[in-house]
Length: 210
Image (tube, rainbow, N blue to C red; front, side, top):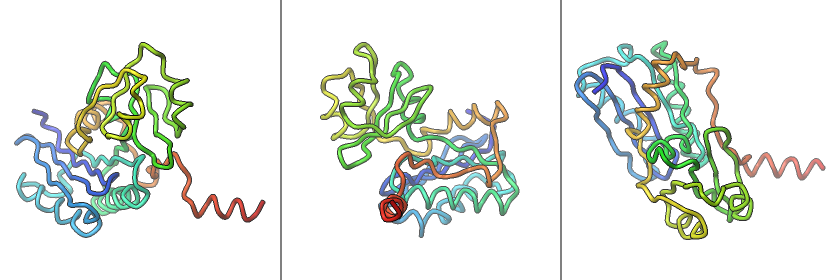
């Protein structure tokens, strides 16, 4: 149990979760699908009240800033930045791919479904948007890939995979606490969404201007 007081927000998927680590333990509130924007702040208040602390008492706020749903990622990042600025608390951005990989430490790679026949692929040194063929060419035959989604697992049957549950906020607390202890805390202005894929509107504008 850590005595660090750390809040972690994850809204990268359809739903999400908010977790709080403190001297009393770890508590987590799950957010129903598509309810993160309306219920996220209520979940934060519930966790702080249960732990008997105020927002200003936190050592840092962590947020899974992608990759994932464009809307979900935006909601979580905006919530974390708003809380950070309101309380003058530093932020710790975490990649969902890093959190997934940390759930299975022997795995060299983590993969998430990016839709459109593409995948988010992460390792200790890179994170990128790839096609299936690109992934098969990048991942060595002896390497293990950790996955959490059926479509990804079914697509990667030619590789060695390990299936785990989809990561939630509490699964990222270990990485966040390590980052806090290492002084890897930044201001709200330094945190941006990790999309890996550019928004459709941006790509449409680029095509229109070409």
